[in-house]
Image (spheres, helix red, strand yellow):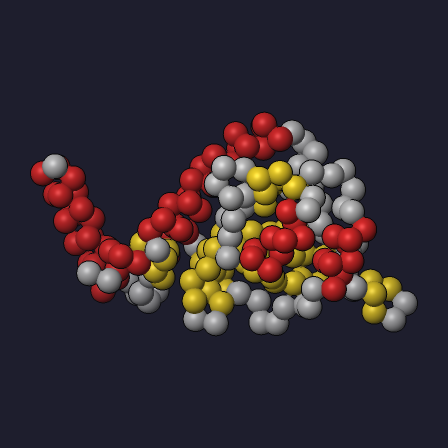
Length: 174
């Protein structure tokens, strides 16, 4: 027990010192469980991709800020089959599924919360134990295509943060 208490004290002290001295500004904070979930996904991502095969993609969980809030996000391209992690926002890159503008499609990017997309994604997926979804199709179903095309283009886009700029909020609060 003393070892764990000592480690926690040392960790809290280091986080506090870094937050005060960092020339790039203070680090962003995120609840510990959410931060650990993102790190766990990224660490296990290669194993997951080996299990689901070459027909699916498992995006990396990234960190960013949107409207002053620190968020997790993942990229999802054109409604393709993927393992979608449980993140705050999905950054939807639309090329083939971009909305039609006049006589052509202009590639764009949308942003939608996982919670907003979840009911639609669950129709075409199998859940993983961590709340992620494996999209189970070879071609995006028509209903999903229409849903992705109807998403509004996102402006402004979130500012990305490097992983070392996001610390657990509980340690930052001390």
